[in-house]
Image 1: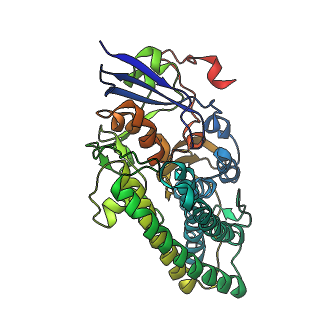
Image 2: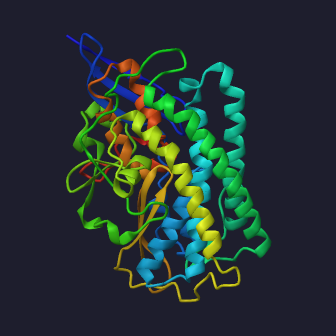
Image 3: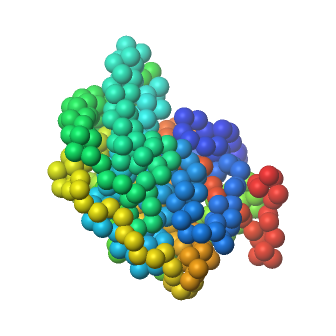
Length: 410
């Protein structure tokens, strides 16, 4: 006969979500739905009519973890809409800021999954290493962005200010320290992930989290709007995808590329740029660990390339035609993050839309759980490191343009 299993809440990730799983008599998931139940805040709607400069500041409040990614994507969407080209050094600083955010976020995720994989005897040293790495990432965000949480230096047209020669030297020194820690982290974690062994001795299924969907990534460390055809991206409502009683609980859309779901994140970047072909939940952990080295090496390259006396902010006017939809793309810690904006001749926002990384991964997670026992479902969820507050910002309406459920927007 089978049954429906609900796991509510799922744990050790950002935000509030649940799993609704249809399982057979053996507990194998036949149909999975991973749902954000985080209350909607309606960011896109309240940005309409506001000055363009307000958007990067506002969207960084989606979340306290992915803030840099949203600020950068927002600024670039508006620049694209207005034909603004930031100076080279402003773009380098943006990339460095985004890298710093990932250098902080990835170890944080590894800490969150450590109860699954790290034995008790290793936890103290593991946490010390994680905290040391996070401090370096946060330092970069602080000095480049102007503040570690919601960096105000992100401006339409580039970055508000450059760093000093002294700060450049400090970043380089700290990155060398980070590189050593990252190699230690990789040497410790990769054998665990490859063995699929949990800290309690349980072995995860070899094909846990397998799926046959594609990947989206536009750049190894930054983002490139020319590498995605946004016209082929279509968002569906939960009612187009889930059964009604399940759809009523969801507060995100379901984006597709060429009519298909797609994975974004570390494994997607490694698949696109480093010929990484491994599948399953463990492969995401492995790619995220290896990406630590990619990030810190690129950070040091930027520090070498940056002209600390160079111009970082364009003075071009922030005006558009109210029609062109600009696109901003950034590779956030959790993957391909896009913001779209239209700006009128008075510099005000006429349209705004964000499709963030976890919005892509939420429907895919439900599919990736299928075929394995439901007791392993949360291991698949955590592998994707969902940041649900970022994904939950759209009011779901029915075909009569009526809000589906008022409880979602209280």
